[in-house]
Length: 183
Image 1 (spheres, rainbow, N blue to C red):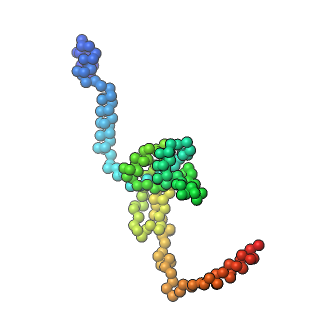
Image 2: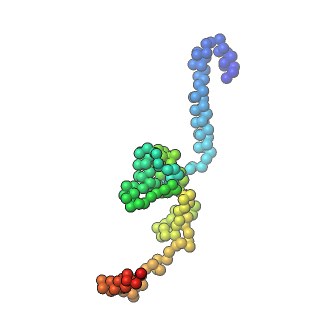
Image 3: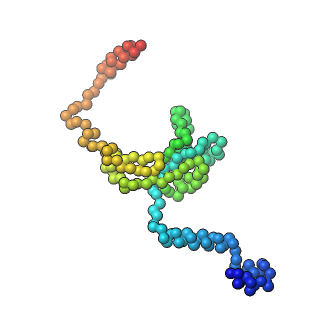
């Protein structure tokens, strides 16, 4: 490169740069692209996560209305109906969201308000029979715990017992006695 500059030293600077094609932005961009290309060739095929755990880490006070609306859509802040029922969702609220382009676009707009972690399955994906014995923690680790597995035979009602039906009078008398004796 220096040899080329010395040979073209008699030309004005503008002509030198045009002829040699020296552009620092282009050169830096090409170097970055080359590094990325090499990393992609050497790295194993990375599969993007199917689910994200999204946790709110900042308050929504004094934030623009569109950021509040996005958090409400994702379930990270209370909706109007929840507000009327006195349900509050504070900092630390987390939800599980799918990895879709639409969700990623929304997350990009509120990236300063949330922490996003991929959901990983170290024990493998669960089958429908294993759904009852699973646990997803706030760090995005989805575990299958055999000790939490529920036996379906224990949940089934006993076949010989009939369901008792109570009349209004049978319910009202003990409730009236509890009401009168509670003081």
